[in-house]
Length: 277
Ligand code: ACO
Image 1 (tube, rainbow, N blue to C red):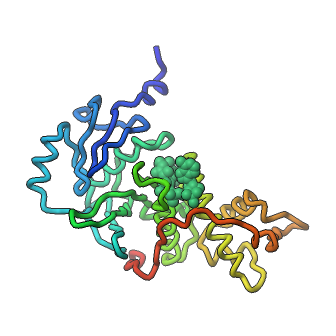
Image 2: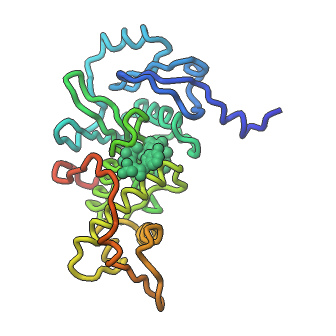
Image 3: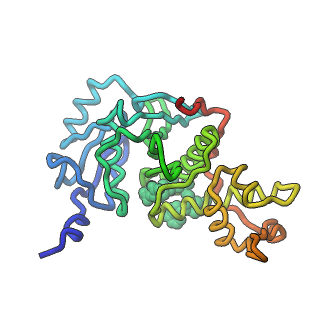
């Protein structure tokens, strides 16, 4: 008899159809029973309602009048927008985000209680509406100062810089809150790659521009990154060594570092957001 551990890992859906994409799923998700064991689950990309058939989705779209996520539009630049959606106010929408993201995440348990979270939903805009690209969730109050609980870019949009865009947004929220942040642990393999890439880019940029020597504490204040993430990244880049109780950054080596794909720049000027009081 397979252990429950094995049972929970069996994929229960072949694909999802969302917007113009049919996306093969990666992992099991504890979907409501009526949506399990279908070949394809049809999802409205605006309301995130689930349908068992394409006809069901088409009938919904014919009646639908909202072509963007619920909540507040907090960022808009060119064809990119971000909505802040409150889990307590839009419970159904946010629970469905969690079901969808579990299809691409192996290591997270799914929390049905979305009330304590805010969801930041990134969309690409065209004449048909706001197309769901990815999101991150964030606890309204995190004891550990996590600034991201869960992050996802839908597979067709991956490796284009949207992950780094979302991570940059999460650090800008931390900046405005005045609290250094870090993503919730453990990170998935892809999560670690995405964060390492973002952190490396931010640190190399900062160190290249630095006119005076910077301490780890200075860097934390400038980036809103936690010191352990700064030191871990500088170590992985082989830019730091520990000498007589201090971390020494090797600035000469920074000049020779090559940066990866810059992706989608996040522009803080276009963020209309202040921390909730
Ligand atoms: N292989 C190797 N490196 C990768 C890959 C990959 N498949 N995907 C991303 N990376 C690395 C690269 O270094 C990339 O930078 P580069 O293109 O400059 O080389 C960097 O990550 C960032 O890439 P982006 O395009 O900005 O990120 P993307 O939009 O692909 O999103 C994310 C990254 C969100 C982690 C995505 O892979 C995803 O949704 N994965 C499934 C869900 C998941 O694992 N989420 C993280 C869980 S941890 C947590 O939630 C706190």
